[in-house]
Length: 311
Image 1 (cartoon, rainbow, N blue to C red):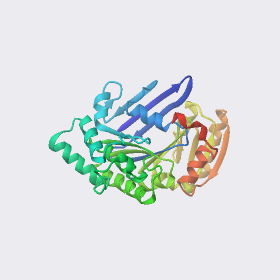
Image 2 (cartoon, rainbow, N blue to C red):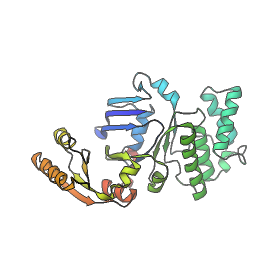
Image 3 (tube, one colour):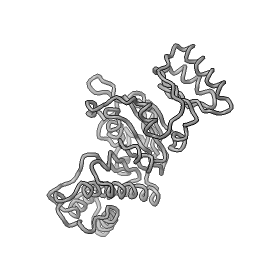
């Protein structure tokens, strides 16, 4: 559904996204994880046409991002972390207004509004002004607005920030239901590891503008029997040599070695390649218990509070 090849983006000479290569299957839920400033929001902003890329190739639903942005945007919807509606209007009036911006009218508009009101479980307060809503009610309205155009691809940027446990669980269940019943492809960014474990089929971890890990949730979370070797960024030549071997998952900054019958042979081969190409080993970890442990190991545990402005 989404194919990204060699994507680059910089601001004021600072690299924000570096050689991003990522694919997202149609009908999947992709959990996009990363610390503050990792590049998550920048990546989503490029995919939705909010900002332009510097270089790279992106196709969405078989359409080229540069040449067919209008058609791509008609297939997508973006639910931002920042609440995007008018607080002096009611939920009903907001849905009616944003539906009209999508060109919906008459019976079709009423049908989509009814669906979104039901999806957000907003029947009891749909005619109340939004500035009287709780945090959870506002988040549900934010999501409902994003569903008005029946998107094939739904981008969700931290959709449960600041909500109570009940609203959070409802939002997560709504996302799963939409994906399951409509086949909607979902890109879900979050700082909450347990949310990603609950809803995602696939997981991509981004740190300092690079994809440091990508794969199915099941495969990543069963890496307890694998060894993670973190290294300084490798050359394409070194990556190419390692990718010729079975039992390895190779990224520019790390190598996963499966604990299979070739484990000893593969470990020896990896270190031989790293030595031959002058690549320094930064860390070696034997096994991961859960997504949070894997995430912290890949991105390090240092705080990024001062880096949130770039994604």
